[in-house]
Image (cartoon, rainbow, N blue to C red):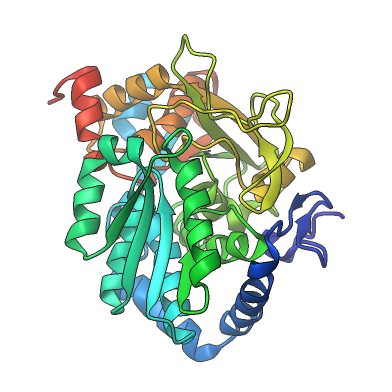
Length: 410
C-alpha cells in the first residue's frame, strides 16, 4: 500500500485496519467487536456532521484556547549557533498539554452516544488530567486507570484529577506504569462497554482509537502550518519538526499537515526515551530496532524479549515510558518519511536546564527529549535551517522529579 499525499494518514489503512499491510488492526476479544464496530461507524458519521464539527471547533477555540503560541527561542539559538530554534508551545493549551484535544473530542463523542460514563488510561497523568477536565466540563462521570509507580511520581496531576471529581484506579500489576494502566482500562471496558465510553490516551490501540486521537491532535499541525506561513510568508525550504515519541499522539498531531511535503524540505524527527545512561532498559522501540508484536489490540514495533514477552521499560518521563508505539509511526518509519532517534534521561535533564537558563519556557520531561535533539543538531546546521520543537507539556507535574535530580533552578 503506497502513501497517498491528499488523504490524512489516519485514513490510509486497508479494510482490515492495517497501515502498510502490517501495522495496526484490531486484535480484540469477541466481546469487544460489536462496541468497536459501533464506535467506528459513529465516528465516521460524527467527523462529517456539521453540528458535531461546530461544537468541536467552538470548544477548541473557547475551551482549549487554540491556537497555541509559535515562538522563536532567540536566546537559545544565539547560544548554540547554527540553526534557528522555534517552539510550538502547545503547553499553553488549557490544562498544560496536548492531551486536551483528544480528551475533548472523546467527551463530545461520549455525549453524542448518550453515555454518562467515560474511562481512560494515563502515564504522565496528562491524559488522565485532561480527561477529568473534559468529563467535568460535559457532566460525565470519569474513571482513570494509572500505574501505581506513576501515581507516586506524578502527584500534581493526580491531585488535579481528584479535584475534577475523577476516580483514580491504581494498577499494581506488571511494571505498574502506562502499559499496565492501558491493559486494565481495556479489561474494564470489556465488561462495561454498554454504558461506558473508553478514551485511549494516545494513537495506540485498536484502529478506531488511533484514528480518533490522530484526528483530534491534528489541530496542532493545522495551526502551525498557518503560523509558519504568517511568520515566513511561505513554507521555508529547510524545516525540521522535532517531537518526542512515546505512544505518539503529540508527534502525529504535530506532523499531520506536513507529512505530504518532500522530506528534504520538511524532515520529521521523532525522539524516543533512551532511559538512564547506564541502564539496559529503555522505551525506544523504533530507534532500538524492536520487532513487530501485538500490544493493546494493535500490531506495532514493541520492546520484547526473544520469546515475544513484553519487556519492562525505564524512563524518567512517565509519558514516554511505554514499550510500544503508534502504528502510524511504525508506518512512517518503514516509509522512511520520518527519522527516529532517542535521548537519555540525562540528556533530557540537561536540555531542561539549558532551556530554563535561556528562555521563559518550562517544558515537561517529555518534550525535553525533543529539545535535547534540537540542542544536539542545531550547531551543526546553518541559520537557514529552522528547527521547530513541539513543547507539548509543562513541567508542573515533574516538579518533584526535577527538584530531586537537579535542584531548584532560578
